[in-house]
Image (cartoon, rainbow, N blue to C red; front, side, top):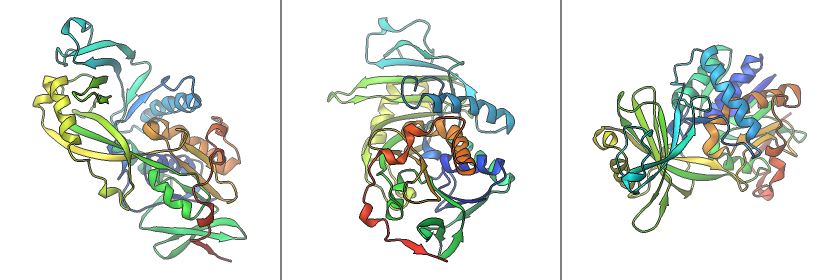
Length: 369
């Protein structure tokens, strides 16, 4: 079976790996580069049970287990490690700080408690993990092609390939995994809308000064605005700090996503208050990315109704890195076996949400045969 995957982010790369692992012919179509958008600029935080009590629970639990298995099986050099996680507030009295809290934070930070242990929280470097999944897929026969996907090919109402850089690439199935840019595929398919949530982040070079302890903060700015910054020290000696999120328009090219005016400065000032280590550490990157979100906050994972041969996997929001392995596994089962066995995909059925613009669906179809 030949499958085209449009998008080489963490979701597309994970689907490619699991399909190639089972012997499918896989071609990944990517406009820019592997992990060029949110998959290369996110935090890479993993949690076993933080989605419990929601429709994401089984997906998250299965994926958390797969992350550990993949790191061992593939001997992945993507910074996988377990970590301890804390909740905290900034600006309270030092007297409220727990003595058992992390020692690298300033006295202005009050630790509210431990919210994750090495049994329940972990991390990866997301860009390295995504690249590692793609390499593992290629080692099993998958191909990566760089260029522009311009539309889909149809025969008797079925999707039978894609138009790529002017060439007609035939396939038995096509998977849309373009993150927030999946909304472009609404020109080709009856897909629900996908929105971009912009997140800002700074990466510091901290060496061994910060142990594997994630920090989730609440902070009220002087104007009353609430921020929820997150701090993740990584195995490579860098520390990732993110915060200041809002909905944003979608540029044509992921490379054009830039931080909002003043956002990085606000985040940097906050970091200086949180930790003397961060206050004195060199900055490796100041960046922004757009995470894909849907109207109900759940991802789109499954077959596209009314377009046999077409599938979609996107809208994972802040849990894209966590939930990529189980999404890839389940999508491979769905495409090759006709149904997912590892998890129940019904909560993520794209048909649960209305298509964004049904009248435009036929515009960029090309019939063949």
